[in-house]
Length: 455
Image 1 (cartoon, rainbow, N blue to C red):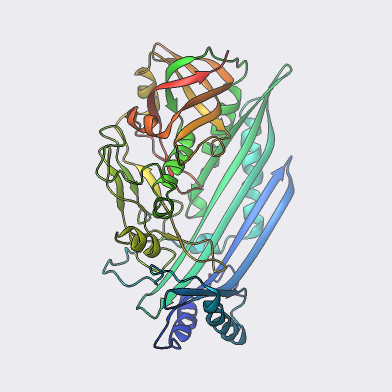
Image 2: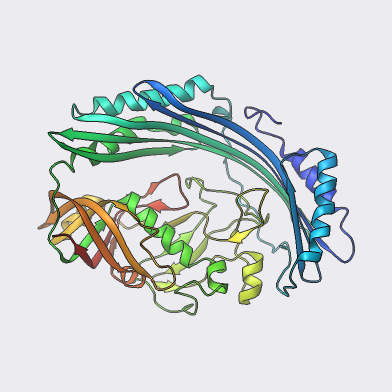
C-alpha cells in the first residue's frame, strides 16, 4: 500500500493499466481502471477527539465487452496474480451479460486535458496532529463566537486519489488530486429554546482553510434563528442562501444526467433547445475550474473533463453524457462519466456545477424583495423532490424579509413548487459564489412566487 504522504505513483498505475489492455483479444474491448486513495476524518467534541478514521485503499476494475455483452470484475489489491484473476473473471462474466448494442468503451475524442494544480504536497504531508488541531481550533473559535453557543461537533476531513485509465480503444490517462475541508455544527441556547447552525470551509491546501469563516457562519446561522416562529402561509418570494442553492443545483444536475435521460427519468428529456429557466440563467458543469472541490482533469472513463454549458441564458443546451448514455441518446460524450471507485462501472452525471454569478451580493438581493423569506437551511430536500414530475417540497428555516430588509426568524415551515417553475421564476443570481465540499457551488438566489406553508 502506498503511503498517503507519498501520494502514490501515477506512472506505476498507468503501467499496470497498460499491461492489462495489452492483452486484449481481437474480438474484445478491454478497460482497466486502477486507483489508489485515502481519507482522514476527525470529529472533535469539547476538546477531545470523538471520532478518527484514517484509511487507504487501492484496487483495479476491469471491463471486457464482446459482441455487446459486458463482463466486469474488480479486486482491492494491485498484486500481479490478483490482476490476472480479475481479467479472467471479467472475461468469464461476459457470458452472463445481456446483449446491448450500445455497450462500448470510451474512445479518444480529441479534447485535450486541461492541466490543473489539483495536488498539494502541503496537504499530503500534513501531520495527523495538525489535522486534529484544526478541528480543535475550529471548535474553540465557534464557542468563543457567542456566549449562547455550544458545539454539536467540529470536523476536519481530507481525501486524495490517483487513478489511471487505459482502454484497448486508445484511452490512456491519469489523474492525481487531493483536498480538505472543515465543518462545524453549533447549537444556540436561550431559555428553553435551542437552534442549530452549520459552517464550513474548503481548500486544496491546509492554508486555504478559513476557520474564522466556518465558525462565524455556524454562530450566525444558529443565533439568528433564536425566537423563531412559524411564518404565515402564502405565496412569496424566497432568497436561497448559498448552501441551499448548492443543494438545489445538485437536484437540477440530477435531472440533466444522460443516464436519467435515457432511462426516462428526467423531466427535461425532450427539451433540448427549449427555454427551461429564466433568461439570464446559465448553468455550467466545469470540472476544469480548480476552485471547485470536485475539479478533475479526467472523468471516470479517462476522457478529458471540459466546461459544458448545460443551460445558456435559460435555454437547455445539452445533458451530461457518458460514452454509454451518449450512444443510447444519439449524442456525443461530454466527459461526464462518473464512478465511485474501482469496484463499479461508470455512470453519467454532473461533476462540478455552478451558475454564472450575477453582480449583486446577498444584501442587495434581499433589498429587491418586498415580502419573502431568506431560506437559510432545508430538510428532507432529496426525499421531498420527484425528479420525474419535478414536484418540490422541503422543510425550511430562515428569516422573514419585509420591505427589503431582514425581519424575524422563522422555522418549521414548508416551501413547495416544482423544479420547472422554480427555474423559470429565478429573478436574480448573486455574486457571492461559494464552493462547498460537494459537486455544486452555491450563491444567493432569488426565486419568485413560491408557496410557503406555515401557520
